[in-house]
Each structure stands twice: as structure tokens, then as C-alpha cells.
Image 1: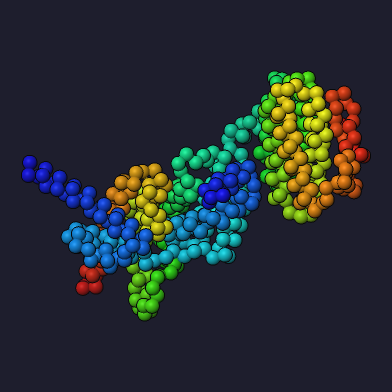
Image 2: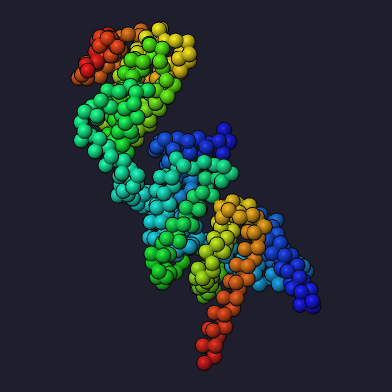
Length: 286
Length: 190
């Protein structure tokens, strides 16, 4: 019984000790007291925490080194190095790649998937293979090119589906996301390649605006808000790219001053396979 | 825009692979992570390597990071603690390098500075003998000078538990110091 009372007393003393220790350290760390002031307190002297506070004070006297600028650069380089050499794929992706390869071996299926539209059974395979390609691609320039190509595919799908009243929100969300991701990747590309990609991005967003504007005219009411939002985003992206290239806004729409020399002719696909003129001269060859 | 909003925006952009946002997060936390890792490992080269590794892991896992009460800094420290543990397993108690940090109030003479440096090194070596969780508490509280609440969030315990662990860790450290100092004075008497 006596032992139990003693154990309870020890426990109570320990409780007050850790609270007292914590309060003292807090006061010192917040600048409200010095270590000496803490040691001198009668309650500290009565308790057994004075030596513990001395050890805590020893920690405080040592400041670990700040990394030098050179060290930070080295860490950044190591970071870049690790990112380069790190296996980009997890097991799931390796399995997925093998499955995709098997599917690709059945070439008919792969081709059919490539032609599929949202809502069709093979469409997930098409999107999956795109994700896979992105996953394999680490370089910003290649990624931005891929993303612009995929955004073009979403645009083509929009053009096929939306005028017929079937305009899935996920399709427009993918269009926006891939366009935005392409812009982000382009920002990572150094000059002069960045400039070339920005020019391509300008073309992409110009095509998007032409297609979305036209689709909007005949789209059902339910799809209009989504299309309008995608159109706005595309316009903002276009404007940002134009500013990044240091270009003036064209005097009138339909006369693209910003056309880079030597670009291949491009236009906008229509459901009937016609070609829509963009900025006066471009046509999109399938 | 508050600092938290700013950080949230960087995190959102970093999740989408925005290089500028990743750079901002790196600039903001590289020092703290490095200090933590360096104190635990005591080796400049290894600390650089592990710090880089912490950021690589963090960037890879960023799409899965959701705040839910755990700040980004706390999440980084968790990753750092795990990477430090890995580094320890790899090096299997390779002798630690002496500390290269600064001693504050350096008005002391060269002998005192040498003595303090030796003490600091001894302390760090003995901290390395404590259980992992106690090491984390001590380094975060006294090297990183984080509050009880911040440490509690990082290690996933209550503030009260952190206070108790801090007390136990210092008590154990005192015991180890006494043991080592006692052994040393016995050697000197001989």
C-alpha cells in the first residue's frame, strides 16, 4: 500500500516536472526569460529538472550550419540527378505498359481505340495510352509537344460530339487541363526552344477558339456554360503566350499577325472533314 | 494574400508540375530540412544527398498530399525523418563526422570553444543513442526550435505526449552523459 502511495507521488512529481520543464523551455525560446532566470526559480531548484534544463541550454548554444549557397546548388543538382535516374515507373505502370504492349500487338484494337470517342468502349484505352506516353516522357519540351497533340485530339472530339448534343463535361475538362499543362511545361523549356513552342501554343489556342466559337453556336443549352468556360480559358492562355512572345494584339480578329514564318499550314477540322480558315491562311491537314 | 494562401497556391501549382512553384517551395524549406538532416547525420555530403532525396520524394508524393491539418512543413519533416532512418540503416553506425556548426557567443577563448564544440559533438552522438521518436522530439524542439504544437503535428502525437517525451529524452540524455563522463574520469584517475 505504502509502495503504491509512493508510486503515485512519483507519478505526480513527474507530471509536474515535465510541465515545468516544458514551460521553462517555452519561456526561454519565446524570449520571455533567460536560462539563468529559469535555473534560479525556486520551483526549478526544488524539482529535479535543473540538470535537464542545462542540457537543453547546451543544445541551444549550438547552431547547426545553414547550407551555403554552393551547398544549395549542389542539393539542387543532386535533386535533378536523382529525378533523372529514378525509375520513372512504379510496378503498376510497368504492368500497365506490358498490357498496353499486348494490346498494341493486336494492332486492330489499338487503331480502333485511337479512333474512338468519349463514351465508346475503347475510349478509356485511348486515354490510358496517352497517360502512359506522358508517364514515359520526362523532358519538358517533349511533354509540352505531347500535351498539345492530346489537347488537339480533345478539340477534335469536341467538334464531333458537341454539335450533336452530346458534350461530356469531362471532355471539356480534359481539353482545359491538357492545354494548361502544356503551357506549364513550356514555361520550363529554355530559350530558344521555348519560343518555338509558344508559337505552336498560339496556333493551338487559336484553333481552339475558332472551333469552340463555332460549336457554341449550335451546342445545346446544357453544354454552353462548359464550352464558354473552355473558350475563356483558351483566350487567356493565348493572351499569355502572346505576351510571353512580346507580341501586340492583332488589329482585327482573323488576321493573325503573329504567324511565325515557315510554319506548316494548319486549319481547323470540321465534322465533315472541311477545313476552317484560321487567321486568314492556315489550314489543318489531317 | 496570406502566407498560407500563398503556400497553398504554390502547392497547387507544384502538383501540376509548375517549375516556379516547385522552386519556391524548395527555397522556402531547403534550409530547415538540411539543418534537421545534418544534425541527425552529422555528415555534410550525406546531408546534401538525403535533403535532395527528401525533396524528390516530396515532389513525387505531392499529388497525394492533402493538407487535412498537417502543414506542408510537417509533412516534409516526416519524409526527412524516414529518409534519415533509411540513411542510418544503410551506413550501419558508420562513425559520425564531427559537427561543423557554429557555437553561439563565440567570445570564449580557443580552449573554451574547443571544449564547447566537443560537448556539442558529444551531445549529438548521445542523442543518436536515444529511441528514434525521442531523437526527433529533441532535434525539432531544440535544434529547429519548433513549438510543442508543431512537433506534435509532425510526429502525430498530442502536445502533452511531446512534453512527456521531451522530459524523458532529456532525462535519458543526462543519464548517458553522466555515464560517459564517469567512465572518462575513471580512465583519467587510472
